[in-house]
Image 1 (cartoon, one colour):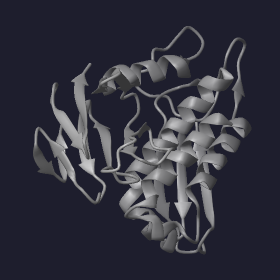
Image 2: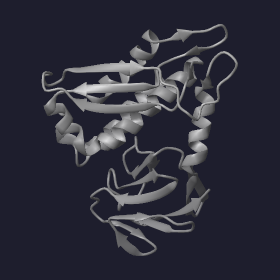
Image 3: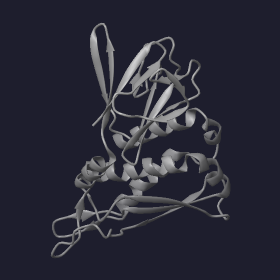
Amino acid sequence: MANLRDFERRLGDLVEGFFGKAFRSGLQPVELGKRIVREMEAGRTVGVRNVWVPNQYVFHLSTEDREHFFQVEAAMRKELEQVVLESAKERGWGLLGKPEVTFETDEHLGRGQFRCHANLVQSEDVQTGEHTAFLKASALADEEAARAGKGELVIRDGDGEERFTLDRDRIVIGRMTDCDVVLKDPGASRQHAEIRREDGRFVVADLGSTNGTLVNEAAISERELQDGDRITIGRTVLEFRAG
């Protein structure tokens, strides 16, 4: 499934830098994404007109795997919740509320082992119809996107300008071809910087690059972006535009 491939790529970007060593053995994040899809298929409830699937997933991990995931757990949780949304939307399934993924530690599990409990839980903010409470995943995704905020990056050069929509919670900028924003700039590192969307605002962070990242000519490690801010990577200037 395309959404699982996207999930695996995004998690790969996340852990390649500071947290890469934690994922060289033991449980791999993509295994959790695959398990969610299986639980969605197994937990389908078919009504007269609609099919809805579990929206709450609790993963029980070994003590060692939980410790490995600790520093990226929040980001991994968001990515797994996105897998639920995208899988439901792709197959026309519905959800009774926002996807929710949580992690718990089970001391009886060994490294690489895990359990998953999937539940269909109605959120209080879901409108109740005459017979069922049903929310299409596509509509839920649109609501999430509207609340999340929008933005874009604009790169200008002698040939014109290039625009990149900031439509995900994490955008990676660098020279690697699988970065979200690829720079053909020798002054840029392979994975140079990232832009994160947090509660409707955007934050740029340097990813330990060789030459550093500037915002409005000032070196930063991490900084919240404002409309019109200019991010300099090598000789490339990216202007942030708030939606």
